[in-house]
Amino acid sequence: MIPPKGSTGAGLPGDLGQVLAGGQGGRRRDATTEAIAEVAARLSEADRVSLLKFARFLEAQGDGAGDGAGAGEEGVDPAAASEPAGVPEPEPIPRPEGESVIKAMRRLTATYYMLDRGKLLNEASSLMAQHVMQGREASEVIDELETVFWSHYQARVQAEDPHRGGNDKDSPTS
Image (tube, rainbow, N blue to C red; front, side, top):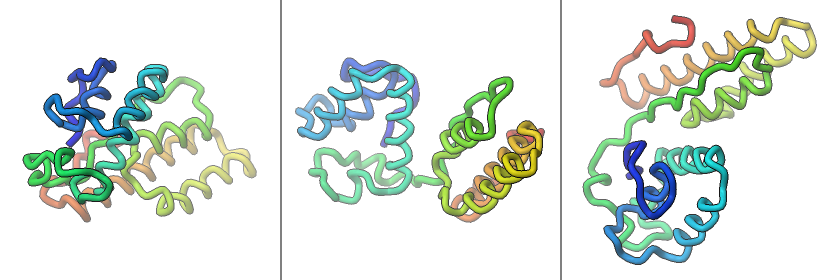
């Protein structure tokens, strides 16, 4: 289980060190974890944030140490294994002034990292084509892209975590 944001450990900023420690309680880390920690220590803060988001994405996909693939039993946190995963919350990234459609796509795919990009591709590429080929205003296209991503996120929440319910107050249009 990836620890809450803001905790520190293993000499790396933020919670990346704690993630890489894998909740092993001071035991020696395996060679792969050591290599990841060494690379992470050399990355910029922004790249470490991206690495952490990717680690959270992998955890959400269920391919982590909990399934026994490629990890010994010491990498499994029994308390985390019993918790229901649910759909992760989006990682909000503020929309910058004068953002391009391409940068908006990058921002939205980072915000909604838990969504299947293949399912979004048809709608997103159609909107991008309207901007590039038909000259539609970037801000209008970005507004619609935000709505598309939010709709796909809400559909996934309803499909996989129906007890959580919708949260329209956080929608991009409210």
